Image (cartoon, rainbow, N blue to C red; front, top):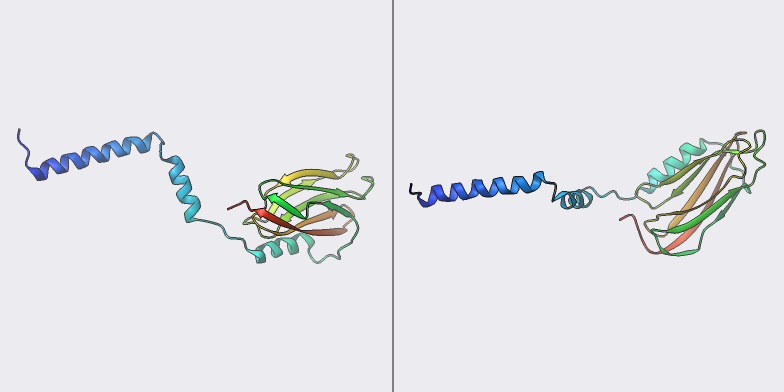
Length: 165
């Protein structure tokens, strides 16, 4: 059976397309598709959204100072592992304990880093962790106390090599 050039090209193109479908079905290009997705739909930081989150947590309550003891470096070499620790000054008895402590980075694409919950009589309200920060910005810690008080502490951290990109 003889093929002319046009039918031979059609045959080769269909064979090539079947081979390429086979490699897609094996999942080989998964990483390439994921990288393309990340580059196409990048999330940019929205400082207005971060402020809306903070206002939603505080809900117009008067801020009380001196409750949060925040420890974080002034300069962090790597934004992937910024060491942070905080302690809430309270007795952890009756209504003197934090129900939630929010940690936010103002210039991250998703500003909420963590929300910690504490319960009455559960020891100390103290946490040490490492977080990711995209670029130099304020780190904000907000404590909601069981008796209705709200406290906010901020610290500017200078990041040498950013993360979250």
